[in-house]
Length: 232
Image (cartoon, rainbow, N blue to C red; front, top):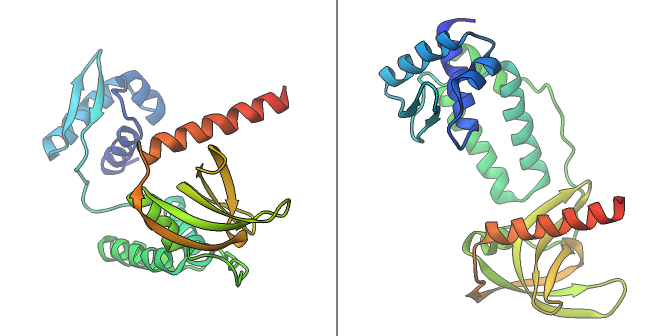
């Protein structure tokens, strides 16, 4: 592996860690000697990378530094194109446009020899089936982004249609189904709502308390606990 590729891989390893990572772990992951890691850390620091740490303590990369030129492996390029295709065909028009813009921005800064990889058509993702009654996912995403409550009408197959105030925290895509996970003020608990059973969704002026990411962690912990209980 060339030194430039090795430095790039080291940057990627540092980005994956949110806490200081020992040089020995970096050396093991990179398949090089600890001395090489020390030299490569010094080289990155000389290029302007803000890497804090020292031998025996560990290293952490502060955000905001890119190694020019932007480089990806072939598999990473496949991940980008496959992910963008999935988003453009399985989500909503707003995210589909964002996926196209993202590939355009990446293509503009890629080395010339890598640009054709973005349009190889090596994968195919089917389009999500049309659901005439599905709500606009852009409204749900706006509510999540702004931590706004949603007033929805929900058709529960086990009961009559009800109106609910929910705090949307996550969107789920499972096979052909789409779900909104959130706190339901009516049930006073976390619930999953199928989007094809939501009759309407209206943004409310009120914002829900706390942070969305913390609520998402609570919901995941609840799901994990129920899964463990059932499997036990």
